[in-house]
Amino acid sequence: MKIDGRLIKKIDFTLIVVIALICVIGVLMIGSATHNYVGGSQGFIKTQISSIILGIIAIIFIMFFDYNTFARFYIPIYILCNGLLLAVLIFGKGKETWGANRWLRIAGFQFQPADFVKIGIIICLAKIIVDNKDTIHQVSTILKIGAFVAVPMVMILIQPDLGTTMAFAFFSFGMLFVAGLRYKHILISGLLGIISLPFIWMGLEDYQRTRILVFMNPEMDPMGSGYHILQSKLAVGSGMIFGKGLFKGSQTQYGFLPERHNDFIFSVIAEELGFIGVAVLILLYAIMLFRCIAIAREAKDDFGAYLVIGNTFMLAFHIFANIAMTIGLMPVTGKPLPLVSYGGTFMLANMMAIGLILNVNMRRDKINF
Image 1 (cartoon, rainbow, N blue to C red):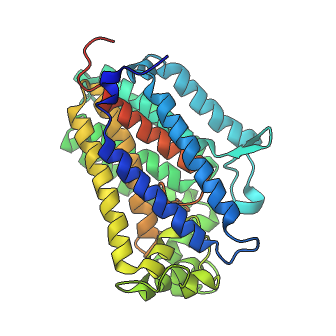
Image 2: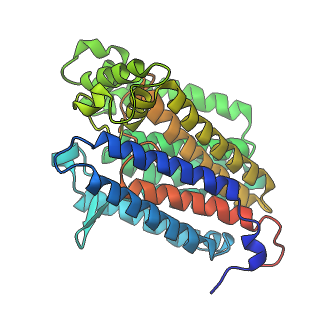
Image 3: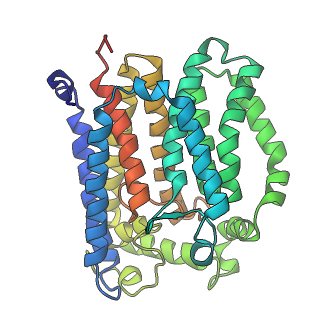
């Protein structure tokens, strides 16, 4: 099995270079964030580089298949996704350490299925939207699509994982909006969302309510639930224009900043590289997302376009949610920063999303399958 040479020439190398630069920044900042950990940063750096290499292999593997192949197997993909989420509810691990059972452990390998399920559901949703494009404005179609997405969303919410549930809602709405959902339906959805807020509040876990209250007033519990965001904001603000320098951030190096190699890696970048470093990273993200949008617009068919749009919305949500969380614009949701934060499962899932986007771009002019 090999890729046609004509397809290789159509690979978006600009996107690949941008992705590589973001990953390099991630490895560098993880090294700084874990510099004073017991045992040093070497193990973290090796693991992150291994995750990137595994992600590159996944991208190459995905490129071998015409993306429409995934559309033909959307039902098995959907069943597999929901099966994994059901397995998490039954056999999930992690509550003792992270407060929620979101991980599965198989043969000594631990991973978070929800990260991969997002990719699978985007594939399924893109196929369903294409199949129902002519009736996308009908209430029955909207309800059918909503129910299709609601099944995995509910199981993820039960784990509980509010952040990933929000990601599902974001990319699902984005795909439907691009598909031509009418504004009246958007307004109705917004009103229903507002009306349901009290019921959502009552259904939240105590720690989730606390996160929201602390988001509104971190000082209410500065040494408890508000500690993360207060330390993060202090780190971000102290970086100023040029930062304190790599390996020189006081909040980072002295251990005041929690989860600094993962959820709060952006705070490390802001403290040690300053506004300049943050601006460079955000610029790279912007180029990445704009290239993805361009690929969606140039896709040869609707399925490819929606596939790219869904993954682009997913990546955009995680970027915005993580940065907003670290500077106090959103509650702490525990969402890592794509391609930068430490974590094998999340890195691999992001790379798979990039692989699908590159796949669509490679075949934008291909006529015969």
